[in-house]
Amino acid sequence: MARAPADQKAGNRRCPRKPTSRQIRAQTSRTRIYETAVALIKKNGYDNTSISDICGEAGISTGAFYHYFKSKHEILSELYIRADYFFEDYIAARKKKKNSVEEAKDYMAVYIHFVTLEGLNNGMDMCRNLYTPKNELFAKEGRSMQTLLETLIQRGQEKKEISLKFTPHEWVNFLFAVLRGIVFDWVLRSGVYDIEEYAKFHIECLGNYLSY
Image (tube, rainbow, N blue to C red):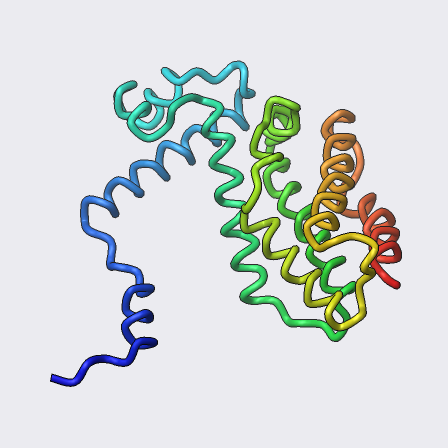
């Protein structure tokens, strides 16, 4: 019997397996708990929402909650997982621009837009609990949100459109430090201004700094 080519075998290994019915049920349950928790937190506030409240609204036991989430704070952490998916979808669907700086500016604008989606409909309390020094996910390396931007910047440097004053990784750390600062100010002021409009000037300045 002829052997399959090496690249074909490698491709087979990379092919994701179809989820089992048990895995689908587990993901459905996790999503239901998450969405119930987010709705309650947006309605009543983070501190005024207990795990018992979430379980009662979702119609599950406390044990079932802890099977999927270690704590109430992990509900907030789930936002970051979803943020990574959000940016993966954005990169896959976006229309590429000729200039890498413009692409980076669009990326930053989308980050701010994602924050507003979570801050709307009484979600400010969620943002307030996310943008704190206690949130270790800000320092976590290798998340899609970061690596996608890093790749974009690396391509821009190779095309001589983005400055070499920083490495791609250093650029990402710098840009996100500024973006998080904008969001923190917005949260600190309880969302009294339009953050997307406010961020435009800052993103334009960052774009100028990215350029040669």
